[in-house]
Image 1 (cartoon, rainbow, N blue to C red):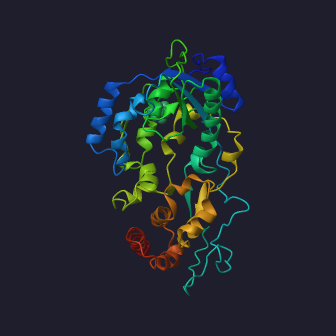
Image 2 (tube, helix red, strand yellow):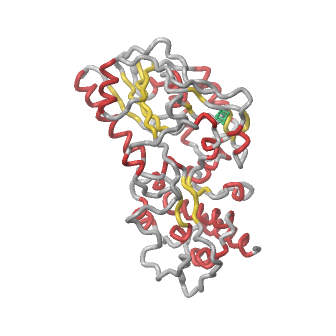
Image 3 (tube, rainbow, N blue to C red):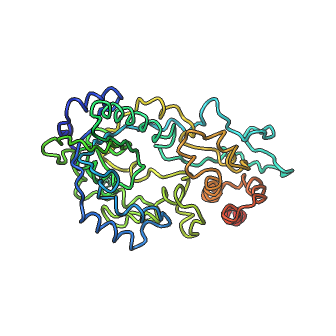
Length: 387
Ligand code: SF4
């Protein structure tokens, strides 16, 4: 269940005022105490290889639950959250941006683009698209939330020059989930994400590590609710079995990891399970009953789509270099995987969605001199040729 009106620990008015001025209403403060027991559990998780190829997480182990490893002398952490939820309005490509590859030949009514002399196959089906995780439809939140937090940190630094205030958005080893929960932002759901009583789980987290002591509200407990006793929807819906048990994630199987963080070849047995996901995955949040009261964000940077909720596979398959990818997706979270990996993902989604129309496009992309791309494109061609 989730509480109707969550209770937030009190935050000193000076901090609350600065955050409100930046449009950040959801906030909390916690002591920056180390948690050796959580670090032990985290190191065990690493030892089991659950982090896949994210080797940087091993380097993060010392600071994950020890904020002083990140900012020496840190006393308090000010947490903020920014709602990014928006309804899917059909996944149309953003207006004013290309929906077909630059310089492509004129398309027919179904969007089929003849390339390299290959005749398009006309199946009469709508042009195939891949899904984008909701947080990545608009502008990269690191920039949007980061600039607001930096302004707050700068102002605090001006008022208290003897202290240090460092702003971060997902850019430290710190376990944001753990400390945000301590700060009263929400509680950790069985899908391992923080759930807030008002916004569900659709929000970004950011924080300021402060060497000045900021008293946390009392008690800095959790007053947002809890997962219903028998609910396991997020675990059941996960196509790759990444949620191995309540609060346990095998990141090496998570579609978000596979499509965004993993730089190499995706294990063949996992590819068909990725379905239509081109970038990230929202399934565990979409089925969560605690997201029913999610409210639409009013942050223009998130609402104005860059990638939008779906991207044409053909658009990605026609890109031949990083520059054309930057032209189309600059400012979007899709820049993290970049052109190579998004093309890799597009090949998988083409196969998973039975997009035989894309066979000529896939074959044409075999000219790209990249072993990872060729591996996935050949796999997709094999699967589609069987249809
Ligand atoms: S789907 Fe159910 S078990 Fe999973 S986080 Fe939501 S309420 Fe908790």
